[in-house]
Image (cartoon, rainbow, N blue to C red; front, side, top):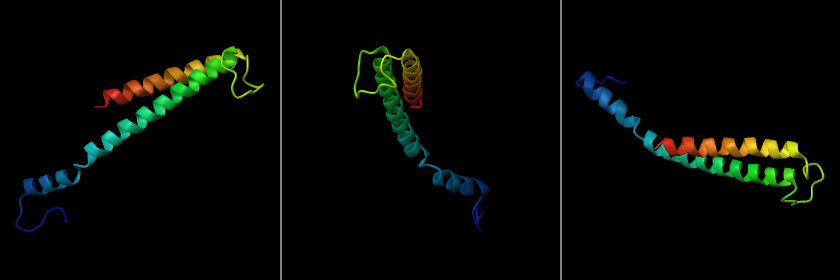
Length: 92
């Protein structure tokens, strides 16, 4: 029970607030996860741009090589990755 016998309301709220303290730890973990996801998205996007433009043909994939649509999609994914990283950095 949140309000125990003999304690005031403010003490009960302080105790409840202390139970919520691990939030800072989870925010740090979320920042790390978002940064990693953003960096992976940037790498995938750059890879797709390279394959779509024919600059980076590895692995040999006839579906993606020299198809400009993949370059546009890669640019969108890379921009999304940059936005995710910037958002993660602002969460500090």
